[in-house]
Length: 433
View 1: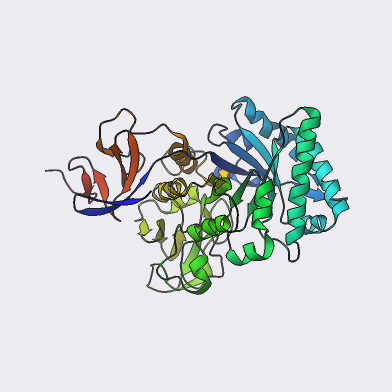
View 2: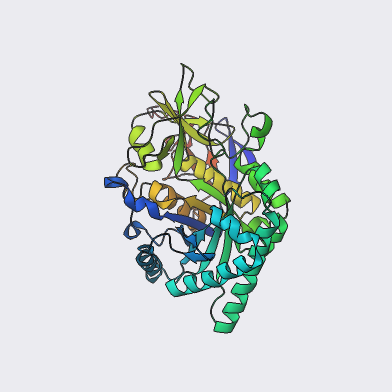
């Protein structure tokens, strides 16, 4: 449970550091077509950073058959699943969804049957451990059909595993975090009962059509949020999925390893500043209004990062470009949040957008995903350490408080860092006496 502490005259939010069970990472197969340092291949994947890897995406071919998008993907499947030789605990899944063919497939039982039979064959033949149904923007009037598909898939996976004496194939879904979409598109309690876990897309709450600057993946509601925007935050989305009947331990919080970028139109630069829409595209990703985390590191070298205090996420401004993103501070806040609320873990879109080569952020390979792994699965920091305050080597804006072997993460107020000379939060450039 979170509690308030007063240390060195500063009010600090504290939460216990406990392990969650899942760190799910997406592999975007199209990233292999990017140029130069942005080119991402399966050989760039570290199989020891994630508990589950999802290959995105497969397709639905004529006859409602699950199939590779390209014939060449079959060789990628082989390399992808071979990663398990380096981490025998790793689970691999194949993702499909969000196409017109998917919507047509779920509409009729015979089509669903063809899909299910072909899915089992494709997954088993290529060494996958399961299937991810990524219906982020469900079609209208398909709510009950999606529920039926999931139930039929689960039954078929159980029967196939029993008859072949194999481990049952894993079945998950990646779903919207928008309240209106949830209400219109998912029978939450019904699908949750037949899924192993659920990835909730707690990012892209703000898109390229915005008229004012705001973070696309805030943890909490912001002081300037009004109307439907009061629901456009991670806390509201996960609590709503839980309240509609999804067990908390099946829900994964979504992390975007990219930022949303807007072009400012005037002198204002804070949250709520006027913007003219999506900002300029990244050098390597070439998507308007989106910068990979490694591109953010490149563009923001020497730029002051600001904290949106009430939403627990950062932003920065370079020239007239406003970018909201996640960093180590916000990842710690989000992991503390899922542990406090007993959610199941996190998922990341995607591996290729982190600084996978360690070329841009001066913090090693996969700085975001590595930090998430450390937060979720590292041994208890305070085990065997004396009670008191300790520096957090991964984040100068936070520190550890140890009490009887239990670890608590504490955060300094904005623009302050933890200083060892006073064992307190202080200004970064303060010279020790």
